[in-house]
Length: 86
Image: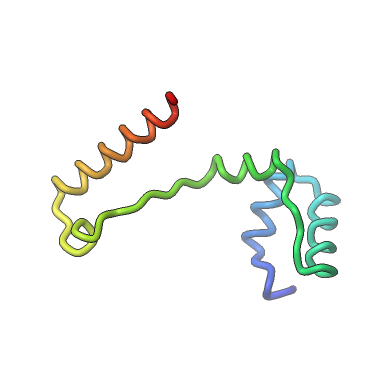
């Protein structure tokens, strides 16, 4: 097992490529040969749909209070909805 390739990452790619082992072997061969590979647009969309990220103001992280956390979550949700509507 190559410790530079996380098995969880390889599993993520496997699922994103519709469990196509041949495609994953080709990606891993490319990685071994050129130290890089390109993820298909469809697979990247599948992966992006699984993850989300946000940021927290330093004040919230350093001294969280429930009200601040709730306000931040509501503001982030509102911004996400407005961004999706645009």
